[in-house]
Amino acid sequence: MHRSNLLSTNWKKSNIQKQKYMAQEVSIIKSICRFEPRNLAVGLLIACFVITFSYFTMANFDSFHFFVVNSASNENVATHRMASSEKLDVADTINSKASPIFSKHATTSEESIQNIVQELDSDIKEEIKDNTEICKQKPELCKAGKDTASSKPSIGSKQQGTTKSMIPQRENKKQVPLCDLSQRRINKCEIEGDVRINGRNATVMWVPSPESDDGPDYERKVWHIKPYPRKEDPRAMDPVRMVTVKSVNGPDEAPACTNHSDLPAIVFSDRGYEDNYFHDFTDVLVPMFTTAQRFQGEVIFLVSDLTIYRIAKYARVYKNLTKYDLINFDCDEEVRCYKKVYVGLTSHMDFDIDPERIPERYTLVDFTRFMRTIYGLKRDTVEMPIPKTLGRKPRLLIVSRAKTRKFVNLDDIIDTAERLGFEVVATEATDGLDRFSLVVNSCDVMMGVHGAGLSNMVFLPINSVLIQILPWGDLQWIGNLIKRPAERMKLKYIQYDITQEESTLIEQYPRDHAAFTDPASIQRNGWGALKEVFLDKQNVRLDIERFKPTLKEALEHLNSEHS
Image 1 (cartoon, rainbow, N blue to C red):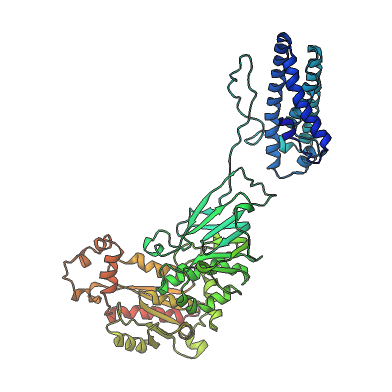
Image 2: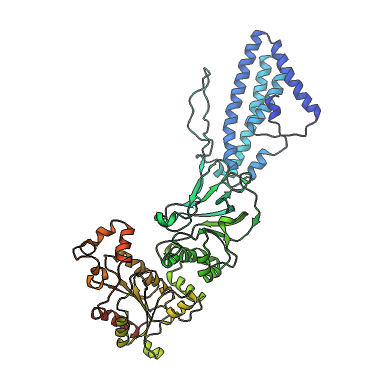
């Protein structure tokens, strides 16, 4: 069938019209057969001119419509392109008129053909006038740029004596990235609009709306995210499930929703270092607070790599950050649809929050207050001076360890602290959080050898004292993992670095061993070597006389008038 019929938009035309078009198609074939050679040559020459002119015009205005359709306003386009059920764009108008006219006038003179060309030229000028009016009303739609009809001129056509007009090159626009891979601790995504999640397939899809500027000509991307904030640590990341985040061209490319929610959703992993108290805080609890607290419970958690032990242990935290049941992401068969989805938790650094990087400007003090509140702890700040305000001695909590890095002379430490004026509580951090958090919050000083147990400092009241005993081995960088958050929690931080003589390593290695002469060389062999020598094999025998000034510094702070 002739192209004029293929481009017709009025599908309700009568059978008479269809027959007329078919008759015209037959007529044009028959008319060409009746041409004399001379007339045929002239007619073909002029026909080539008109067709070439039509092609140029079509190319220019096709790009114009492409640009406007992807702009913020479609009102003018609708008016311009759909003024009547039979009105087409410039290229379609030319082609729809060309065949009937040439079939009708196939045996006419050259003068008649010139009249036809003038008639077509008049129609084209009218279309240009219409588009000019649009440009006057919406000049921003017609500015030259990547998406307008302005482009570099093309090389001349192969036909002798003709040159192609400037034909725009349609480019794939760059989509605004859904995911940020630039952060040090975690790759994360923030997606708004029509977001569809299928946990069983570990897929998060963003579907652009029909009204969105992000049309099908945009370049689509796929991100593979492990939503756990330790991306530079292969050992922690290996067990974390990969989540695929991608954008699609439209609803037809995405599965239909089986569950709708207007609430935001957060997809994150609960795995990583799943049996380490310190990492529970630095990799899950603090990032979860930083990400979800702003929603005041009106948020849904989709938890990948879900561990029942951790969920049960921190049930109070989860229940106070979301009012809704947790969704086991990996087992979820639903296609859940949300308007806002976060893949990965906000995590700035180990056991810390950077208020400059979040709109709510939360701090680590906000997190510790949150923790004390949900565990029902009454003390927010140490009342100083303690003997005067509370009528009792300052209370010292010694976090003892049963296996590694334990105090060999614990009894001597307790006796010394009591003689200096402390009320001493010595215990392992093995009780459930409900009970142990009460013990910590009732104390004014907490001390212990570097380890995950010192993470219980989140339950200490503001202005209390944290004493970290740093084992031998040039471990200052490890000590900072506790020092920095303690100071951000507004605690008085005191560090005590033991000497070789205070380490039980002297009972295991000769004094000329690298453990004493060059601890850094052991560290260069990797975390496994460091952990084995300086953390797993080492216990502590404090030099009481050397340690006394540390306890006195804590007392002076608690007995002072300032707060």
